[in-house]
Image: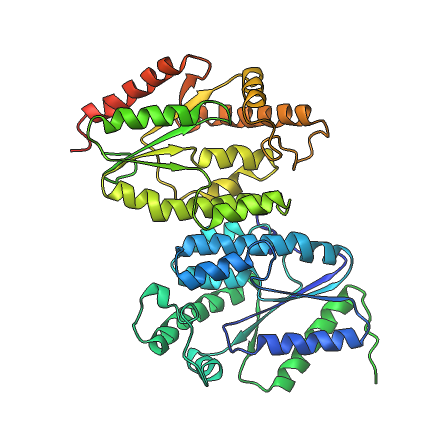
Length: 228
Length: 219
C-alpha cells in the first residue's frame, strides 16, 4: 500500500514541480513562492538532494562516479526521507504550503531511466505523501539542451554519461533525457501529474498554476488575501 | 549449481552482537584458505563512502527509522555491487559477517513494515549457506556488557523502549532475537547454539562447508 496514491489529511498543502533540467520549474516555483508570501501565507520551500544528512556525500560520490544506479537511488531516497520527516511532514501538520522543487517522481523518472526496476523504486518511496498539486513541465530534449547548455557542455550525470550511451555528451544527453521524459509521460496518468507545456510563456504558465493552486486551497477552505 | 548461479560460494554468518560471529568467520576463513580456495570477507556497514555517513549520523543523532533503513540499504547495495558480486563472478568463496537478515531484524524492530524492508533487498543473491548463532538473551547481555558495553543504537535507545539503559537493551535485543527466530525456517538458517565452545561451533560450520566443497561445485 503506498501513501503516494492516498489523499493526505494534513492541514497544509503540498505542491511539487517536476520535469527535466531546463523545463523552467524552478522559475515557476520561485514566482509562486513570492506571490504566496505576498498574500500572507506560510510557505516553505524544499528542493531535491539538499538534506544535511546526505546531500554532500551524494554530490561527492557523483564527482567520483563510484556508485551504481541502485546505490544512487537509495542515497536519494535517504535524502528524500530525511527532508520528508524533518521539513515536509512537520510543515504540513502546521498548516504550511510546502513547495517542493522535484519530488519522488524525479526518482521514478531518473532511476528507471538508469535501469532500476520501476516497481522496486516505487516501493522504496511508498512512504511519500501524495501532493495536492503535482505539475510536470513537458519539454523535448533538444529544447532543454538549448536552454541549459547555451554556454556549457552537458554535465556527466545530466547527460547520463554513466550509462555509456554515447561518447558524445550532447548525443548522450539527448538519448538519456529522452528516456527520462518517457518515464515522466507514463506518470501523468499513473499519478495524475498535471502536464504543462514548458515552451509556453512564463506568464501564461504562472497564471495557470496560480489558478490551479487557488482551487486546491479553496477546496481546503484557505482564502488568499490578494492585493488588488 | 550454486543457489545464486554465480561461480563462487556465498556463505553468511548471522547473529546478534556478541554472538561470536567475527571469531567464527576468522576460523572459517583460515579453514577454507588452507585448502587453496580464494576467500573474500565482507562485513556489514563497511562501504567506503556510506559507512562513514552512518557513523557520523549516529553520532549526531540525525537518523529516523526510515533514513536508518535506507542508509544501511545503500551501504549494502554498494558492497554487493562493487565487492560481493564481482568476487562471486570470479569464483571466490565470499564469507559475510551479517547479511540483509540483520536489516530485516533491526528495521522491523524499529517499526518498519517487513514487506517494505524485504523490497529494499529483493535483488540480493541467495546464500549457499547461512549459519545463525543462536544465543539466549541473558547470556548475550552479559557478554556485551562484559566486552563492548551498551551502544546507543544496539540498545535501541533511538526507539525509546525505556529510559533505563539496561532495560532498553534487553527489550531491543529480545525483539531482534524474535525477528531472527521468525526468519529461521523462511531463510533456511543452519542454527547453531552460540553458547557452545568456539571449537565445537567451528567444527559444525567447517563440516557443512566441507560438504559443499566436496561436492565439486567449485571445479
